[in-house]
Image (cartoon, rainbow, N blue to C red; front, side, top):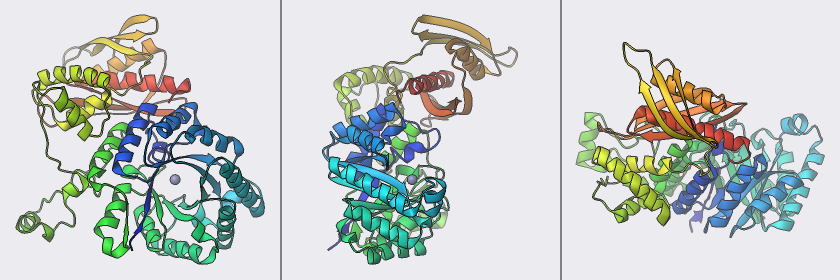
Length: 506
Ligand SMILES: [Zn+2]
């Protein structure tokens, strides 16, 4: 009998820790919905102690999702565990996830205590969590650099205390596949009560081996793997869910395990996460990159035409790529619009459909043919929080080869509409300066770029900015057929997010 490997998705926790990838609660919910459709077994929705906004996002996800286990991260302290429980207790299947270091580096330099003291802290945390929740996961942070004998003792003790899942993280991305496989096998051999818990791994990609290490652990008997969509996460990121899942699937005879993932949804999920976090994937990225299935050499093209198996180990449709493009026009009704948006992964309420349909008609009038990517941009553009501090009311630009650039921007604020004119190095810079003057929220622009959403002439432009203020970094995007307008929208959205974050709403 083939065994099942549980897919634990931490896009909304570890993934969201990528610099600039901050998500609003509404965006997290949207991604959680798509992860549920994708068929992940566990959604790690956040780290509730990090901010009131994250707490609220986790709570909404826990309330809403049917199907997957919903978990959130706690340090091994009572206050964190209580907060996690408060955020997830309404889930149909809640799980408390506790993390505590097990390496000497962490034991000595992070906690400044003895191994035995740290072990006891972990055991007490599990006992307390267990008094609240049936499912408790324990992560031995920095396991790859831990003393093995001590690691085995910790695992045995936390299982005795009630942990149902023990996760072994390669927190710093230090492991290599052969050694990692042996560690997992040794844990199974040396921890007497290991059969009472699910063994899990969590691998980081600092040496580019997160996926390889994860798969090596599966060979050694790990039956839960932690990963993120597109491999986003701290530093170089985590094991990419789509790569792990497709490796297990394409090489099923080798691994002899299955997952509950609907691979046909991988491409769509990747796109949703890429758009919402602003972390777009490289064209050559395995499974979900734009070129992942593109054959360019003549020999390969000829070979594939003769027989696909000549150069293809999987088909684009297996992961939902190359899905036939449906083009909508101004004559496409609400029903067609709704259907297409649902195909793209959006859950739309009737009121949202009304609002989107109005904007869809404006766009369809401007550019005749509306592609999936355009719809995607429309749908994600709407997802800004309702109570925006500043709204773009209008703008006028002067720029050219013989005149200095200047921008006049009108901004809706709590106290009505204000307007300012500012010069600048080009129209976008002038507009941003005018906005800075009016908001009184000085930010540092870290990144700015504009992309055409689709390739035709009347395409939508999508601008994305990353801005920083007092150490917090946020990204935001704006969409319009006018790239200056798209840029201004992105900038205003980013400032709204910063202000919302500062007042405790994420
Ligand atoms: Zn991590």
